[in-house]
Length: 454
Image 1 (cartoon, helix red, strand yellow):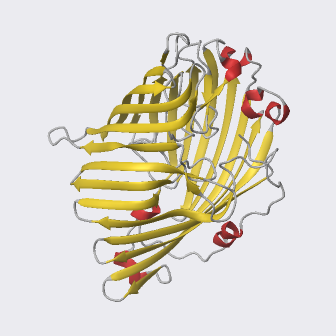
Image 2 (tube, helix red, strand yellow; image 1 turned 30 degrees about the vertical axis):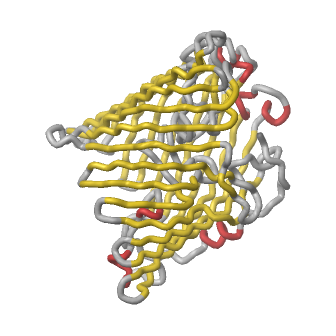
């Protein structure tokens, strides 16, 4: 559902300020989740970023800013009328600032504020585009040698972000309100958590906890001693929302996901294989859904540019018989929407795909990725699904052909400095019968972004 607001809003002041901030030398590692960074060891060397308070406390400041411009020709595969039938191009602005207080060895207070803005989108911003300054994260944590506890508003990723991600592609990052407890010993880790997602609103300090959705579960990572290259994730995720809507079912959704992931690297090879089974119910229909995903590759480290040849293959189940009182459509919960490509055209539900991928590194800080993805419906009786989470069915595609299409993607990233990243992507999606029979057309997508961290 589009959120209609004034189109002529100026970029957020916070984002503009961050883009012109002075650039200090990087003394530690910048991490995707900023609260996992610890600058205490170099605190005296990087003022004014880190200040010592007395003998036992440090206060670290940081900031993130991103400008991302992108265009679609057409939007939503050209299915529908109005703005959805034509192209669109717009710019997204993101600014975040945080403070991280560490007291003694174990106590942490982390607060992060964020502002998001959009310019140029036809019809005005969508719900993941725009928000005036608000609390992005704010929590109290106790970080012990083996046990940690974090309570409050926080971001979270699990595994390769296939089911739970911070939603980096869209403008507004995803955060949750709740509690997370962790146990760690060496390379082994177990997490238990209970969360509700944050409901983003466009005003100032008006974001609230969603009352209609919840996520809870256990996630464990083990590194078997005698097969060191192999790492294993085991997890259970419980998910509830007041109103789930699929091509073949609608109503209150209670879904349980039982999954495992095998991953690792050895002698140039890397592998990442994941399988999930889902049960529960949507309305009066029983859920029997599943997915199997893999990403395997080999890196030629002795060749120029260290080319990696990889193959991604995925199946996310669909619903074969809408009238059998059993729902087979897989729900990826809170996934990374750019899983298939930066264009984020499709969601992992009722889908099969095979994607050969070539990655090269002409320089340590420069990476290019070329992929060609071929996609089908798992069952033609079900729909084609699109982001954002929860996944959205394109109703016109119910019962159309199985072949969704293929997309060629070229993506590049360049880090001239640890604090700066330039990214670009071009995607051409050739529509197959699953879309053309619904009135869909091929799509061209272009994206550039500039990101800064302090």
